[in-house]
Length: 379
Image 1 (tube, rainbow, N blue to C red):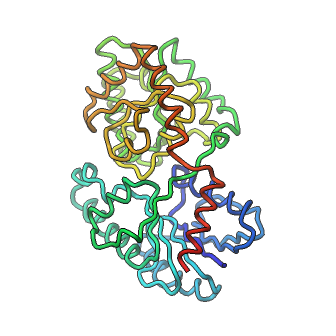
Image 2 (spheres, helix red, strand yellow):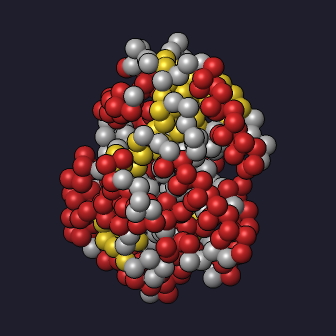
């Protein structure tokens, strides 16, 4: 088979890039029977070391240019190269496919009521338009892939006309070795010295409105008010959301939390393992996720977890997390306090994480094998 993988939406590092890297590198290693044409955003760095994976670079200038490319150029490329299947790896694809199409849905913000209720004006309108384009892509696709049952159910709640048998749940792949390929950069390692013997709370996530960083900071304010020593480490990069970053850092200064909430900046994926090894508790206040790579990573290192009470977080963690109502920073602080004040409780939760970890994901080899099976089923 000849497969065209459409991944133009990928331009920065995060959960999407982890999924992409794991899948493509494994396909290149284990699947030499099929040919892959990989359409990549010119802003995203990736080199193929495999003869059966050819990269086609595209410079996307705007949202409208991307829409035009999906509907006009993509069909022509598929026909020109005689592909058997187009895989739209990031939400959007052809509305009228010229060959069989599989679409991967991994943007939960389109279907997250908690997040949508906060949108106003242009942001709300843009959300509606993007959700409509995602729907048109799904309606035209042979198979719709989601990384979790929670993500599938969110979509079907908004679009009940989509046939249930068109959906396939394929949990992401993960291997701990991905996070231990390099040491922490020295400036980041030096930041960890600010712990000064206090427990380390870790939240690994890039900065977006639905990620709940504001809840995390308010929870730390409450912990400090109650006299519980702890230090929260974040991995934010201002470039992801400048105005949100500036507001959050202003609150940290206003509340006198400069020594209690430390932002490490963007941490290389290959060095994240060292952060997980050093942490005492993992905090996950995110409101909307399609899968939640950091939860799997935290469980892989046996960390006790405090998470917002959402369907996806419960699906991923089961009994391996303590939950609190989303947005309720006081309740989040109380759950953190439960773990920080009891070594016995932390040990119980560590065991729960170790037990839940193998149920939360696939190995990359298993994932890639199931991916190839889906390609065959779509013909």
